[in-house]
Each structure stands twice: as C-alpha cells, then as structure tokens.
Image 1 (cartoon, rainbow, N blue to C red):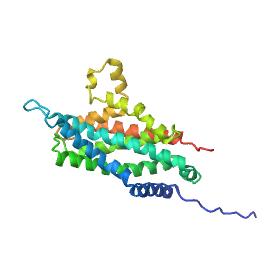
Image 2: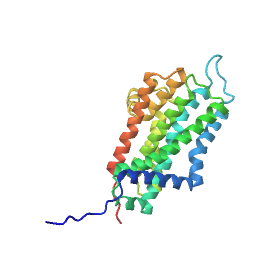
Image 3: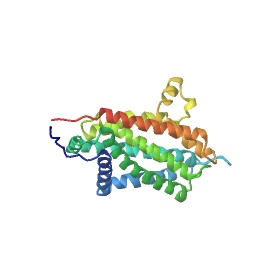
Image 4: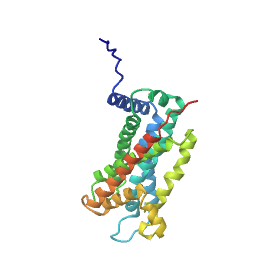
Amino acid sequence: MTATVSRPAGPRPLGCYLATTLRILKQLRADPRTVAMILVVPALLMTLLYFVYKNYPSMPGAPRLFDRVGITMLGILPFVVMFLITAIAMQRERVSGTLERLMTTPLSKLDLLAGYGTAFSMAAAAQAGLACLVAFWLLGLSAAGSPLLVVLIAVIDAMLGVALGLLASAFARTEFQAVQFMPVIVLPQFFLCGLLVPRGQLPGWLEAISNVLPLSYAVDALEQVSTHTGSTGQMWRDALIVAVFAAVALGLAAATLRRRTA
C-alpha cells in the first residue's frame, strides 16, 4: 500500500479574510492623521458649507439652499474621501511588499480585497454617522425623511468609493498615480450627478452618460429622502443600483489584482 503523505493545512480563507480586516483596522487606529481625515474632514466640510449658505436668501416656505445641497453632499463627501484614502492605502501596500506576501497565502484575490473593503467600509460607517450627526443635530439640516436613511445611503456611497479606490489602485504604480485617478473617476460623476444642474436639464448626450454613473443614483436616492417622509421604492432601487456598482467594482478589482515582480 502506498502511504498517504498529509500536507499541513494552510489558513482557511475566512480566517485570512478576518485577519486582513483586523490588520487594516489596526493600521488605521495607529494612523491618527488618516483617522482624522476619515472622521473629521467630512464633518468640517459640512460645517463650512453651512456657513457658506447661512445668509443666502430663500423664498418663504421653500427649503434653505443648505438643506438642498447639504443632504446631497452627505452622500458625495464619503464617496470622495473613501476613494482617495483607499486608493492610496492599497497602493502603499503594493509598494511596501505587503500585498505581494499576502498573495502567496491561500487567500483568494476576492477575499483579500473583501477584507480591505470591509475594514474601510466600517470606517466609512463611522464617518457617515458622524457627518450626519453634525449636519442634522448641530447644523440644523432638515429633510422630510429619516436621518437614518441618509446615513444608510451615505455608507453605501462610501462603500462605492472604497471599491472604486481599490480598482483604481490596480492601475497605478505609485501613490501619486493613484491620486491622479481622482479627476478621471470622481470629478465627472460630481459634475453630472445632478448637484450642479438637474440631470434632466443636461444636454442629451451628457444625460445619457450621467445615467450610467453610480453617483447619479446616490444623489437621486438622497433626494427621495429629502422630499418624502418615508422610504420609497425609487429610493431603495437607486440605493441597490449603487450597491451593485460597488460589488461589480470590487469584482473587477479582484480580477485585475496581479502580482508585481521586480
């Protein structure tokens, strides 16, 4: 009989996924500047926006301009901040060789990126919660719907930023190149999402482009919360579309994740 040689079992993917998540969270906790940028910057920018529009006149019975713009920015700011931080952090992992070492473990690419995505999404949830707390309870932001729905949509937007940041980092070779993707990926969505000009008033070809950009649906979902006392079917549909975009971006990031050799 031929003896069967047993090989030592490697770490399970779930264990590697959890270990990756915890490692990123520990790194964030040890980096006060990054924590401050994640948690404090959106709240400070919302405060700045409040004072920008504080003395702006509004028609009797009409919502303040801060109310209309502020609720949209609660979704846009987490998206922008998490895209920037995730792209830089992931690229830093590549340059330091940490990513190369992790790819030698049994952990799959998707599980690896899911660990990064989970850690940053947890940070994004804290970010969205703090920004909404400041906006609604300190700055008096008013919306017809529940602030909890705003928090939910803001977290989904932040997760989209995380997923797109992970995807963008796959095509960058330095941290500076990762930042350069921001004007390509973030700014067109900001211009066409409906914040500056209602999407229905855009030229036809620009409206068609805006219809395939995820941030447009995030803004639409927030507008539903702003004008309706409860959740609506359109709000849930738009939020689901943003979540699907995030999942697809994460899958594409895993597909483009490659080992980098010298």
